[in-house]
Image 1 (cartoon, one colour):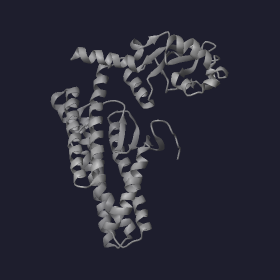
Image 2 (spheres, one colour):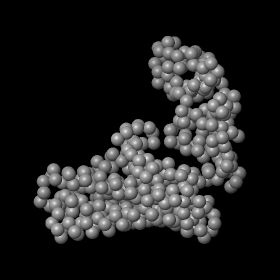
Image 3 (spheres, one colour):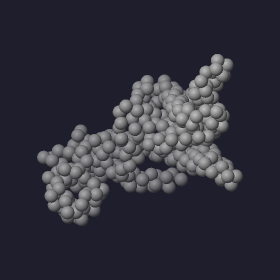
Image 4 (cartoon, one colour):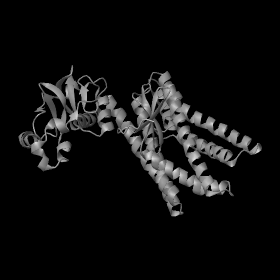
Length: 379
């Protein structure tokens, strides 16, 4: 297992060419599920065994759920690949999994089939695990096997039904959007309506969660409320992302770049950087050059984390961020791709190059200003 601690999650393995990554929040979910199964579900459903036995069942059940969700997302990804949709990978997090599409589906049919593939797989797994459970009971398999099969059948049915709810961007919401898209031939309108469905579904889950809290179901109620807030948030975000893609469709960042930025020499000390650049120009990011060649960048955040006493002895080249896909983009890069890089790496500024040479700087604020102006003027 390759432990990669990049901000896009923990790299686990590749499956059919798709990277499988794990967000750190999944670890919390796995612990919670394992504890719930070992301390509650299995002892109640299958009494008479030792606590250690139940913990083994709990761990096995959690691993089975992990594989079930991976297979669910893999089905989305394989259908997406069939229709030429670039898939950046599969990521599991606290609320489930996601097959990360780099572009929108090319047609309503492609979206309908891609969205439906996941729930269909989960339903199939539910039937398969239930069949194995019945066979295990009939053939007197160890409860460690048949009991876990029973749990996995139920959880896969739940995953399928939940994902078929008509709230975008759940699978059911995407199926709903594909139908609206096919009927209206207007992806933007279909996305807005489907996203509103996701928002209302989120409100409904929050309301049901509050009722559960009142009735004393603390964990279930809190979980329902959290999922409701998450669904609300991601529904709005999904529509905003499509709106932004429409605004910048076909645009590279070239027309939005601030050209000929002030650069700094790699051999300067941090003291010189602060006095001659930060206090003079008040920019938060500077390209770093050495012998006329771009070698990296130095930001306000990097300098502020270093003790002031060390500034006179520390050269920029010792602490700068070297050029990489995380801080440098080509001038012909699509705006949507630049925004994705900024979001994935939680940064607000990128250095822009042309044929490997320093060209300018692009900032999130500049792009947000463009979005605001176009949103207001378009109405």
